[in-house]
Amino acid sequence: MRILIAEDDAVLADAVTRSLRLSGYAVDWVQTGPEAESAIEANEFDLLILDIGLPKKSGLEVLKRLRARQSHIPVLILTGLDGVNDRVKGLDAGADDYLAKPFDLAELEARVRALARRGMSGGPTLINHGALAYDQVGRVARLNGGAVDLSARELSLLEIFLQRAGRLVSKDQLVNHLCEWGEEVSANAIEVYVHRLRRKLEPGGVKIVTVRGLGYSLEKPEAR
Image 1 (cartoon, rainbow, N blue to C red):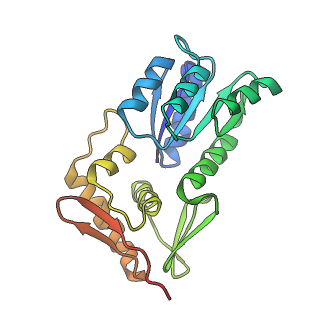
Image 2: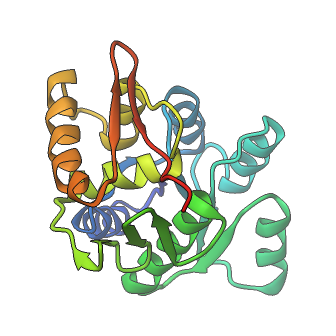
């Protein structure tokens, strides 16, 4: 899962970025409204954490323009404005959630997980895919009831495939959702990550198929 943070407070942004990266997310950071708009136009993000009081263009303006362009990226607002009218304005502009400063990082991460669940499957905590069960809150995968030992990158890959089960996922899409700015990941590296994940899932009959020259697809489980 790739997250964009639009926050002009460098200390706060650094703390949030470090916390989310430790949880296995790819995180990029911008400091102004125009930079946030440019980043979203040029890259694929799964979530935008947006400060309302951005320089040059407010977060509220950025949000309204995103929704006017039919962008459906989930947006979590961070702001020091905690009045009822402020929350209403943010939600009416198209925000999916609202968190007032100061906040606890644990609560922020819980809200990020909740928004990720909505994006993956409409909200349920547990996703079942054949013999595979994925807990979106704990970010734990189980195969035939036993825990699967996955690295942070393998876990992120699994989330991407579960979001698009039965559909083709190109290598470019995987790079866009897995990697931050300045992080170089080659096509060969993607192949290695997919191979490792495939090897751990196949004992349970969960198959990631290679579509030569195009990408990969997580096969839908057979109906029982």
